[in-house]
Image (cartoon, rainbow, N blue to C red; front, side, top):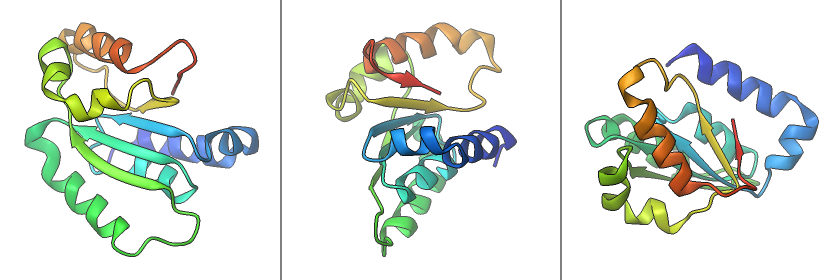
Amino acid sequence: MWNACLVLYHYLVSTPTIRESLVGKRVLELGAGTGHLGIGLARIGCHVTCTERQREMGPLLRAVEAETANPPPGFGKLRALELSWGPDGCEESKEVLAGAPYDVIIASELVYLEETHDLLLYTMEQLASQETVIW
C-alpha cells in the first residue's frame, strides 16, 4: 500500500465537511491498487467503483469480495472493474463509462510516469463533468 492513499483517505474522512459531502456520492477510484481508499469511502456510505489495469486486478478483486461479503450498516456500494487509461482503454471499459459522469474521482500516486499523463487526462475527461470533484 502506498502512503498517499492513506493520507488522502485520512484527510477525506477526518474533515467533517468533506466527509459529509461524500456520503451517497458516486465515486470512481483510478488506479485503486488494493482498494484501500475506495473501500474506506464505501464504509462511510459512498457508492464506489474501484478501477485498475487488468494485470493488477487480482488483489483488488479479492479485497472487494472480502469487504462486500458481510458489509456493516451504512456501507455504500463497492465494485471493482478493469480500466486502462486512454482511448483504447476507455473503449474497452464500457461498464466504467456507463457510470459517467461520476460525482467524485479519487486517485493517489498516479502521476509518477510522465508518459501516462496524457492517457490519464483523457480518461478523466471521459469520466467527469464540470461538476465532478477530483481528489
